[in-house]
Image 1 (cartoon, rainbow, N blue to C red):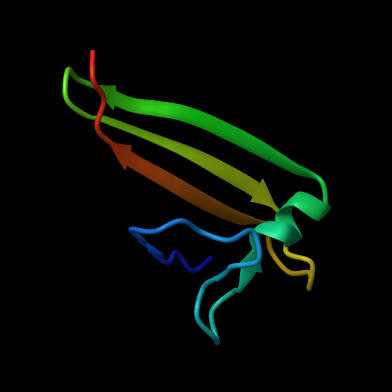
Image 2: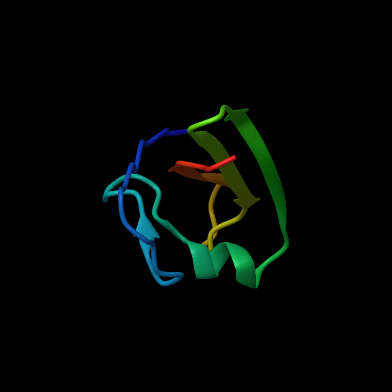
Length: 79
């Protein structure tokens, strides 16, 4: 498959489509509408920052191969 890094620094709408043509395009809504698996994990937590991610694994509404979309969150924490 084609792996694309769709990094972003702002909030993402559930209508956002990831992937640029002619690569596979998949929307959050498309993954949520069908059967999918969700993986959530935390990469690291320190006294000043944290990194976490959530992965949606499913089939795009237009058909085609299984798609994996990773949404990563970087943030600061106060302990």
